[in-house]
Image (cartoon, rainbow, N blue to C red):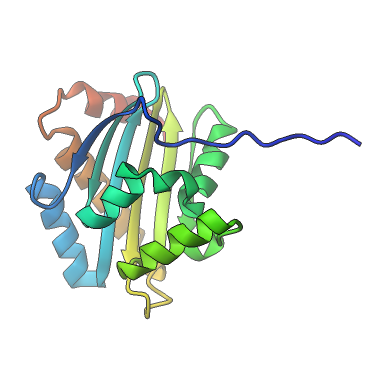
Length: 191
């Protein structure tokens, strides 16, 4: 019998060059979040663009305290949602995946801890997206109220909510003090 060990996926490591944004430092992204908060009762929004060659990561989160734990303390490396999406993308040169959060249940103690801490911030029942291509990985995720178990259906019923938000987040985060070459790279990336 042959056993294979699955390589532990590290999403944020010590060498990562992190550029972190919140509602105070990226007003365009904050306005997008506040619109979603009013229209679909979104409690959380995160967008992350990663250059896989340089290990540079641009991250916007609508909740600084949770971002500080998720990215700053690297809980993302134990988040079952990110792990589901990124393990799928690791097996491909390019592609994308949509993940309703309830389809990525925690399987380890560390993953259960991450989910428990996230729920303390009233971030639950979400919908996520991951894409990879041409040396770039991109994620967008929406969280809903812990009591709204059908929050993720907002994106299935109306995909334009997702696509419009993705386009707007790219512009608001990637053009925030950055060279437009990043956006050009995304446009060339067939996702």
